[in-house]
Amino acid sequence: MNKFLRCASAAAALAAALLPCGTARQAHAAQPSLAECVAEVSSRRILHTLHAETPLPVASTTKILTAIILIEDCDLLEKVVIPEEAAGVEGSSIYAKAGEVYTVEELLYGLMLRSGNDAAAALALHHSGSIEDFAREMTRRAAFYGATDSKFANPHGLPDKRHRTTARDLALIAAHAMQNETFRTIVSTKYYAPRAWANKNRMLSDYEGAAGIKTGFTAEAGRCLVTGAERDGMTLVSVVLNSPMMYERSAEILDAAFAAYSMTQLCHAGEAAEGCTVRYGFCYPLTEQERSLIKKEIFLRDPNAQAGAVAGEMKITLENRLLFSQNLYMMER
Image 1 (cartoon, one colour):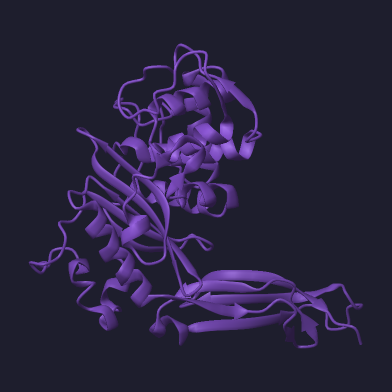
Image 2 (cartoon, rainbow, N blue to C red):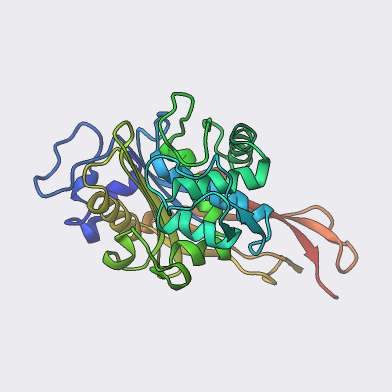
């Protein structure tokens, strides 16, 4: 377990389920998941884990990756003619019929609000021409996002022994996706009027600061939920896999993370240091105890550098672990 579980005393009742591994859990806590992860979106810092490196089936939470690939690669207004191969895919559906025409945007809403497996297949075929080619692109793109322990076999998450990811990888994929404005708009929509589609995700109504993302269920994967939430300028994503009480458990681990961590501005764009300036600001999620352990160091390599030239470097560390570094530029004299 991550050490934030020991730092959330201000929310002890909410964090009771998050005791270190091997200790007893209080009776009122939600039943834990087979795997869990919480990450802060901008820094990708992992704030909580439980078996987060274990490869597992993840059901329709797979569609997070499908959606962000289509958003990044396609025009949302492109027309998609539903192919025979996509019509009638088993499981949850938007009931698209072969030959019907949707836009990419409409199919994305059907994918993320109604969890349409037919929408997933249609989008994959539109993007890559075949399910197999799209699955290969999913695996490649996931690795690019930092999810290196994943293998995808389809765009919807229906059972396939080759189709596995981890709670950590899914959190990193979701964190990347949540930095895309179009993705956030879609997954935070409660009702899509053009097609009369309501969002299945209860977190949007039940959890303070919730911003989507995706539910999932198969008999093999159990109940899965990826949630995005924002409070006090900090955006988190949580992942619970095979979690019998997925909504309650997600709320618990998010509450504990919000109680233990806050975004801390460690340097500001334009900040002056030793006659130099920094160009980029840096924020990082820290516990109250960690904030006292932050160290900022200035290394001047050329104090006589011309105005605007690189004169040195700033490094920010936490207990000797490098968090951030950037060049220092000589100010106007």
